[in-house]
Length: 400
Image (cartoon, rainbow, N blue to C red; front, side):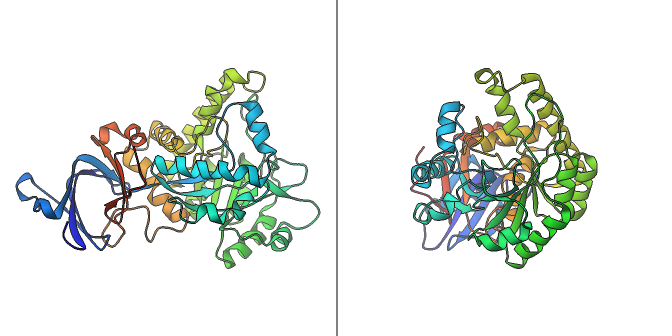
């Protein structure tokens, strides 16, 4: 290397924009920032002392998971899950720290947490400082008293207005999480629940949160709960099962992000033998296929699909689930580069990180993942990274 300027030769570059992979490219890096990207031929390689040779590899931007629960583990052991769901913040502290380690080991360098019942993550500053995974936190989710939400929320809203509950809490969050429907049924295909909040109630909250520089993520399944959330101006719909084409068109028109978390349903099906009294495998499979059909429509309509795994749900492991979610996007018709774009550029935009993260382009930091082989071996090979680069240099914390 020569001072603060060097060249990185890559066999294949997938830049995060959704554009086709480019073969034989050179990243020209100055002071850790990409100054330009140009093609190269065998005879015009830079001098070896000025270059890093990754011509055997595919280079992609670091991955981002737009929906995780750092205080929950993806184990399928029901007793263990119950204990964890009843644990206090001190007991959950090492759990969150371990999940951050797992995320980093899979090249996931930024996440958006979807909330925990005690708001524990808001108190883990020492665990987050110095970590190599950037975390956007939601704290405790808001839900209507007597409805679904206790698992991830500590603020059931009774007779008060939703916006008042939010104002009184004063949580130091990065984004606000609201629950506006129930869970998907694992035994009754297509069952829907009524909205927990109206578009008027949600709209009050959205306007205040936006004025404070915060986004609003809404758990919503079914036609009415999703419609109320989108009409209210929420930034993202989480899950969105059985929401229908009209809602997808509305989201495309308004620029609402959709975080479909399809892998959660696949994972439920894979764990069905461990909990047969709670899961009908046929219903789960039909529900997954329906979600993939909605994803196909979303692609056709131009909905901004952000990749989120709901890691911490049954069978959904932090880090490795990103590749599984990517595979399902591709099953729904997304090209590899588009699926990667959902986990990089689209997610960077959703998390407000798009000035520095999400794409490999001139003017942006030379942060990227390295995996041997060709694009044909992706996304599988993303589970076996060769290196993680930050500012054009290998991150010494990553060990294969």
